[in-house]
Image 1 (tube, rainbow, N blue to C red):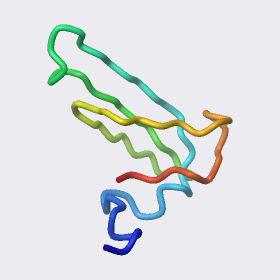
Image 2: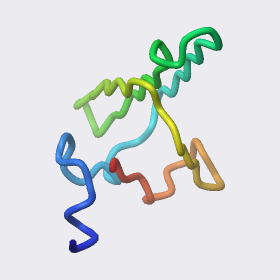
Image 3: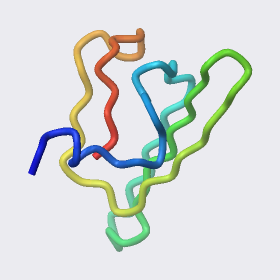
Length: 73
């Protein structure tokens, strides 16, 4: 599988967006209720993405400054 085929197609070129909101909710009693809500902005375009049961999260050094390394798998 080519590396680019691993990226999720929900948002084209996510690295062009700035992260303006990051909310991690961890339900210690039931992992199925845990989620991340990510708010992204590019000019006047705002996208809010919600990821259920997140795991294996990595955040680059320099967060929340734009690092150009944002990818959604």
